[in-house]
Image 1 (tube, one colour):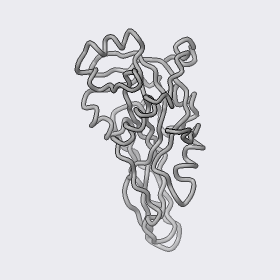
Image 2 (image 1 turned 90 degrees about the vertical axis):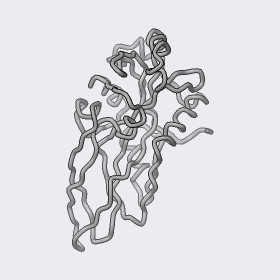
Image 3 (image 1 turned 60 degrees about the horizontal axis):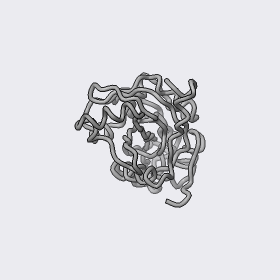
Length: 228
């Protein structure tokens, strides 16, 4: 991975992903590191957390009913991404305070922290369609990477069940998670892009960590503004 293009904050991320007639399936994210607890299978793990990859998820097709601007009520996902939870296959939770990572990273989720860092749900938003041409509707999801601190790492490695969901990358044990940001858009179907599979995204992230292209800011543990 040679000097990949990186985007900071929701504005630059969204401009790259769907700010033109040719959407992109995903992009690397420059973000801050925070420190705090997550819960996996009932065990509390203190970890570093940072955003790392934004990507598009296909929500469905839409079509206007006239040659004028048409408003359609569209369902979008909220909470943890269902593909992430299905892959994890065990209870997983974060306190809403972890939202600090998005605030520091200038990432706008579109929903309260109690909805974003929670079980999957659904929200309805208006999308605007122009004319009768078919559209493809997408939503932005954000992948985060987590690494246990020393004491928690010992606990993780001593529990085979929990250890199984962490991956070794560059000598680090990391977990890749994802949430659904309520940032949806419609694009003419002829410009539709194939979304990335969750397995592909995880592989890219782990490869980047292994090659030290992406790192955690370990000084975050010494900063009260970066701890929750």
